[in-house]
Image (spheres, one colour):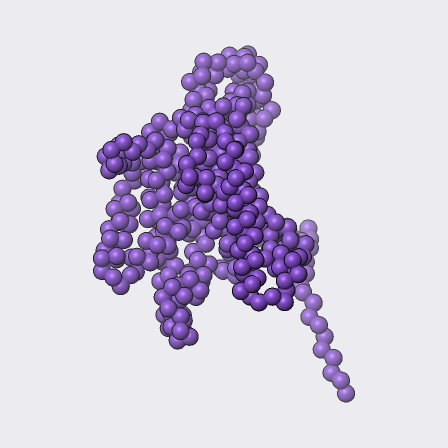
Length: 442
């Protein structure tokens, strides 16, 4: 007699009925006289706050005007968003030449294309794509934004970046439609499936060298005009500083954390001293020291502009904070993981890269993203040392003659912009936690 097991069907959430909603409200909001009074008062405060903000910022607001006086003539009690709208280009791009804004937009588009494969499910080698984004994209984007003459080093790095971008994009398209990688597709296309592994590797290496040579010759005749760093500003400058800081903070933090845990006394002492030095002073002090002290340590005739000095300071500062986050994650890994890795013959590098670090990074996702969000917000401090980031541009609106004294609206707009960016980063970190099965999934 065959026994048939009934398949378990996933439980569906029961729809919320009107009676259950009333019961929930009675239990949580009106369970006693005191709670009922608090609920009514809280709802009234929320109502007058939301109604007041809506009336000031939307219904009575002025969206089109030539100056602040005209805003007052139209509506004296509403917000004057006309000044913010007039300054939108400056808020997003600073004083970057308007005829060259395509370079900034193209840089953002290339970053999106470069990173899009990381979210495609059938694409392989995502770690390689992420590493090329971190280490090669800044050279291509940096030249695209700054322009000027290209030395041999920059030509090589730009060529490598373009080749990787083309390779990653082709690899992603092939993986999306066929599930194969680019090397597998090329070997199959050339009919070399039966060739030895060494022959296949040589063929792929030859294709890579040929692609590098073709792109190198092409980029030699490609150049863009110089845009001085003093014209960079707005949200563009904020994202450049925070983007470079975010890209370098995690690798730098991992190196410093491993150095602090090293068994070599010199490496451990130097790493610890470096971390504690930067963590013991505020970022604004580090920025002032970077703009005044870096030139004293540079060789004679070697000049770094203020933007490069600020980026270096931000990278070092956040790498030290990230090092403590990484160290805490490493300490959360049981010793049995280290012993098990040594038992199967893995050395220090293999143990850290294949066993310990992947587990530690999963536990560190909330703290890492929290550090990244803090870094993005801390970049507004560069306005104090003369860089016109987004905060500097928002404050400049109130000093513009037609909009003299317009303070609230630009700062509220900036706050809303930062909220959207930071909220998006926070939600994505939560998505990563659920995807990697870390923390509570509910």
